[in-house]
Length: 305
Image (cartoon, rainbow, N blue to C red; front, side, top):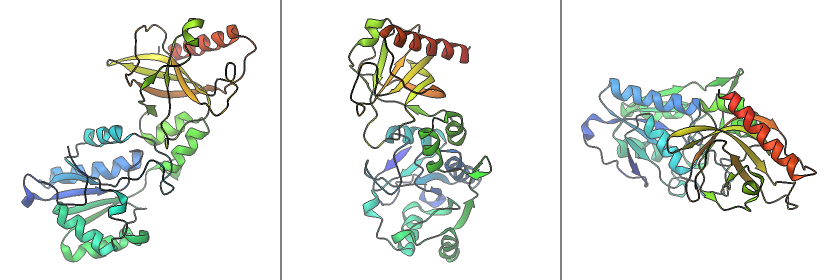
């Protein structure tokens, strides 16, 4: 997949064949996003065109789209796995002032677009003035097909990244995973912690959420962790570690992987979340804390048995 970071012509191998372009922010690559992207990929296969995606980049801290569900690298990898060949991703600042007409003309000309795919709630152009209906109107004289994909549904309501964030904040991992179409997961570098897990005989990997990322509800989770291509049942504690830490603002994500031994510092293993077990709590003794960790690890092993 070729990534083009400016609103500029795609380096198409065969421009005369054109493209089918899926358009959207696609911040979680949830089941609704996937339907739009897969629609464009399938259209391209059927019509001997190249499948492409148009999206845009926002600063890590932005108030327009909410906190991140995926890193940029994981977003690229997921979109590539869907069969996309060209990925156009300019900064939002470079396109936000374009009128709907300028935006459509730019997409069609830069991508040699023969078909455009979007969701029912897609907006474009300055002040989000463009709608799917306007997109059809603007594309008709250009001979460009427009396909508006119905919004995916979960529990009889439209799937959205906002609903996924809300589910994560509530610890409703099954709902978040159903809407994502895959387990919610993190892939952050393992960092040095206080070493308490080693002292207790339950060594954990310590991962910190980067600024701007959506965190699930604090508590204890059944997870599984991928190390060198091997998946291990694991238990993850997300929170301020109230038993040993008085600063509630210091939130860590610590995962115990029973049966694994090795140095993971500096690596970035994938940790998938599968079930919420209980809220974080302050224990009276470290022995109680160790028992809690071991119990969560046992339940994780039973879950994946």
